[in-house]
Length: 408
Image (cartoon, rainbow, N blue to C red; front, side):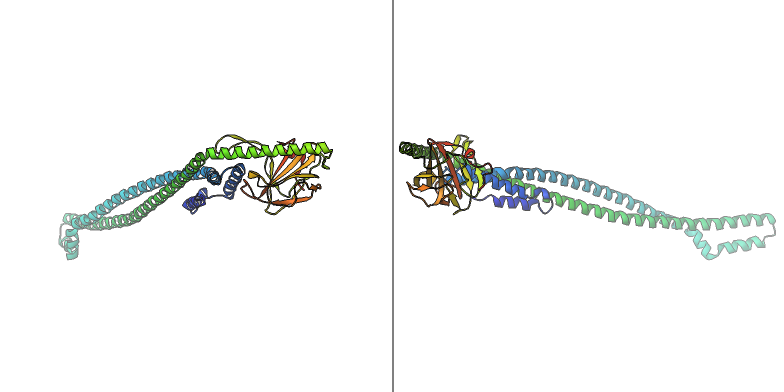
């Protein structure tokens, strides 16, 4: 089975550069590890193929919610980027229209300058030839006072017209210059708006690419999940057979323990046990799995986990929970390397998956004596001690026989 880690990495790369929403937090990774550990604990009696499929199922089940959330975030970012790009394009279009209007105003102002210059060209030419001076000489040479007044009035009219013409041309030129400056500013704004629109469109395309990558990651996860589920389903019958075999082995062991209890009762030997009062915790570790019925994580069937598991490193010392007589020491199918001790009064304890057994059948052991080492033999997905307490051969919850703290 391929690992799912690269998919999470791809998902992280798809968005971590621009938004933490695409990131995979430590809590997400811890959740994946917890799901894997729980799945492993529940598939101890499964085949290697089903265990591998279970690990993929655990990883994909834990990873899919985050991946699907990343898709939602990516699609939201695409929508936001597209809206931003559309707004930027509208602003660019408006800026270009404003530029066209200002350019039209500038052209009109430039034409007004030309018209003003042409309209006053004759006046300026006459001024250049000194026509005002000739008119003044004619007025002064006249002996008629009324003609002199009329001549002066005409002279004033000519001077006012000249000044007005100059002002009109100057104003037209100023307006043309202002229009030209406005057109230049509008051109700059239009270019900036079009650049912003292009950038926004490029950002939208990037977001779309990210969303596609996130969607592909989800599709890959779903594909892995479905493939693993198909493998597990194909092995359903084998898994049930293996579980039935383990239960049959447990019952054979129960018969052997009952016989040992009868033999001890016949001899009056209680094995020195304390009938379960004050058992010591058999290993220095932490409880990783409880006793009881639980639903199979793949098939949905219910199965009994007949003991309490304590996680501990390979080679960690296993101690006898109480004094008694070793009634079984050796290999036992799914239990792997197994030791069982009869404590008398129909009470016994069993220690499974050992890497080493340090006692022999028939040997008497003391409370807290070293009897073996933790391992991962038999149906086990990692080093731990599977600890069982049996009453007349039947499995019961060990926690009620151990210190409340479950500590050594």
